[in-house]
Length: 208
Length: 208
DNA sequence: CGGTTCATGTTAGAGGTCTTTACATGGGCT
DNA sequence: AGCCCATGTAAAGACCTCTAACATGAACCG
Image (cartoon, rainbow over all chains, first blue to last red):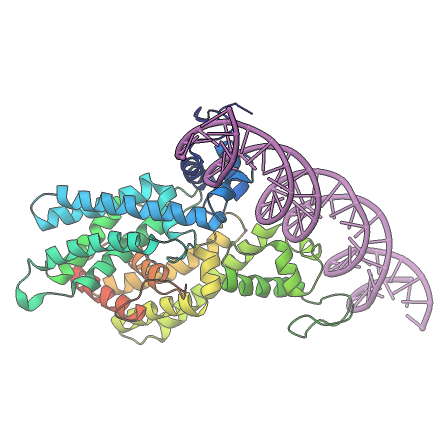
């Protein structure tokens, strides 16, 4: 069959770039039906190949999801690092920029976020996955250290703990309230406002 | 077949309490393989009945999962309410008791927690599900109101927002760090300590 | 007490999906 | 040109979902 896939890219018997097409298909399907809402064969269909073709590139569905999660963490780390460095010279302003970038990622790249945190993918499922996740977390931690460094030496909270708190709150808000899950709890404010307010309260509690 | 199920409870042709057995089977299976890791037929097998029997009690797998989530929220609400009322007369002490109960539930009843927050069950999937979830959240909110009421009238933050922040942090910590997911990020402290510290910082930020 | 009823089981099977095995294709190298 | 092998397909077998038709036995009723 020579007809092209749904993006009009396929050229002949061989797809040419099935690996990437499967990733895109997985992201599309996660967006439509959640991380558990599609099968390996569904991804093959969406990419325009037979249901056996994906096995040439991934051992099974979990391996595909693991690759998606890994790429998600890499993209996430980039976005967080960029938000931090573009957030201005003031650590606090940069910090808020980071928080917004976190939620923006959770919202705009909801499919990646889902694969990263809600698909039940083990950090050992894919080589490099844990490293990518660590890099994203390190970005948060560096930001926390930079804020902590502004405090007088006697009142510096542990930056690691601080970054864990912030990560937990950002993830909690993203996970509970920022998903478009049709039937989610309604909020009196946007998730971004909720997170910003939460971070401000938390930082004030630290004496910042 | 007169042999009994894996818990030695079955008596004869009729199971006697298949509905409950299916719930237990679902919880067992979620604990072993995650909320997406088993089928309706698996649950039937685990309960010791034919694969058609569950249809007498649940329309499909989602209905079973919805019932599990509903019971989970009911149990969760009970535990939170009890922790609050047993936490002592001091609102702050009661508040910490509530936080510990939250994490204890996420840890000890990980299968319920998974069905409630990670299985993608819509709050409309089952009659009474949303009500049960609301009751659990209301428990958090009442606790927040009680703490807020201790503050001078001019400095009272909105209790709803406060309860959302606390829920988000508790859920974030439970979801990211408190699961025994074999390959989770290691922490320099227990999740309970992390949450307690986070709540203290947050409450200090509010002026409590 | 005997018979009826009906909720709750069973088996059988249609229809579908997933996964694997054996075979087909053609791009790239010598 | 011709070979190799990465990357596709087709088809078989296993399993799941769901329905239909039948079986069992506990509870109820005359």
